[in-house]
Image 1 (cartoon, rainbow, N blue to C red):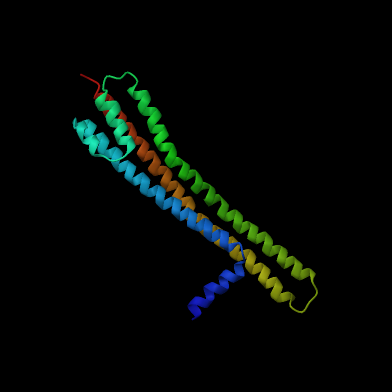
Image 2: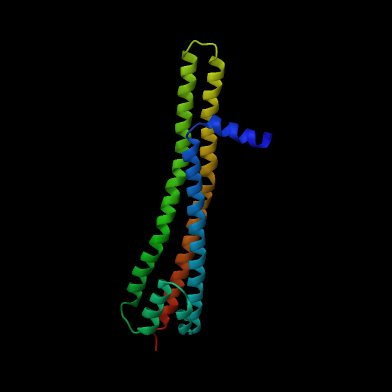
Length: 196
């Protein structure tokens, strides 16, 4: 029973700001895991596309799912003599990666919000502490302890929620760079298809 009572008491001591902090925590993990899965999937597709184009097996592009693979097949295989293939590919790859980067921006915003909510709880707890000190009553010590507890708990939770987001952002940015490198390989091998 002690295992359940301690977290509940901790949550209660943190105050109402722990609810939005929990929502931010959920959002950070949701966006991180979703974006990570998409980046892994799209990087694998780009790797397969580059290998197929390099090996001269362009027809295999039709078996790769997704709008981007269909675009690559159209631009490099169905119309290989197009003078604007490189420009069209660049435009489409930017549009393609912007959707993924949008999720990274949202993750960055959530990661920034977490410690700010913790700081808001700190300020609220300190106000509660100062009000307790200013009041002359018999329960001043309990009210001061409650305010300090709230201040420290919200700060702690805000930091604990934000730290995985910071590391997750760094990982997703590296994965995005890797995807862009793979898309560069697709472009290179696709343009080589134009040679007679």
